[in-house]
Amino acid sequence: MKTRARRLGRLVAALGILLPCAAQAEPQDAPELARIAEFIRWGGVAASVPIILGVLFAIRLMERASDRLSARFSNRRPTIQKIQTTIRFFLYLFVFVVSASLSIRLDKTTLTVVGGALAFAVGFALRDLVASFIAGITIMFDRPFQVGDRVSYGGEYGDIIKIGLRSVRMNTLDHNIITIPNNKVFTDVTSSGNYGALEMQVAMDFYIGTDQDAELAAELIREACLTSPYVFLAQPIPVLAKQVIFQSYVAFHLKARPYVFDCKYEKAFETDVHFRVLEAFRENGIGPPAVLHRQLSDASVSGRTA
Image (tube, rainbow, N blue to C red):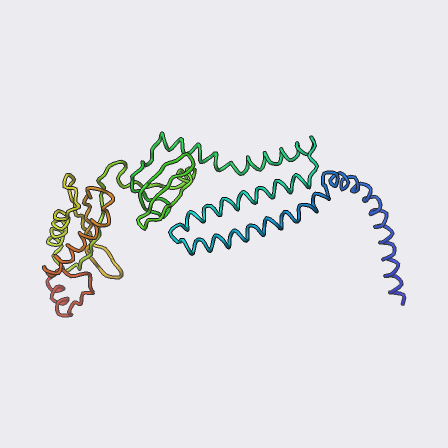
């Protein structure tokens, strides 16, 4: 009983301390709340609710109609989707402007506060756009690549089809349009295969066993490159060789570096040469890398000779 009485006494004392503090805080917060409430038109808020619900209902009907039209006129589906997206954007903008004008008292103080907030928000949102714009001007003068170049950037590989003030557009070999912001171009390494020229070097790798005739293989690869209809004969066709470990096999690596006369035929040139080399290797008995088994007698003979 004594313990309970002590706890009850402490609770009463704590409430006696907190209640005066709360009474002192209420008069300080009340003017702030009243000042905020002065900017709001509660009648306008009530009138905005049916407008918002009506616009949402209209958007829903538009989406259903758009889906039906897209299913019926499939060849016009991208155009229908563009129109639907544009109408939806303007409906959202309309309901925002109407609801704000009905619900907020627009006086000089309100316009100053709202204008400052909008200016800050727009400036923050346009930060990357301004950076891309400045980077686009730099690209025009520095020219790390040109329209028509075959470029490797950020794991993507394809042709540059447009250089704008905000972004660069690339058409990959899979016919995907990649949009790259200009300010991102200067933060990553960009590799241009032809840099304004039509012809481009196409590196091709071939692997044979170490027990095969490497010199004959190099000549067959060079001949396959020379006889391809896509080769650019004004440039030499070097074939480099070295011994490597390829997929746990000791192999002989042959790298050809011919030029294609037009970079858009890069993959066609590469495919044609590989088919020609495969057929030539088959006719001359040149095999791929394989595990070589040496007999113990051969090893002992070579040891005695040494």
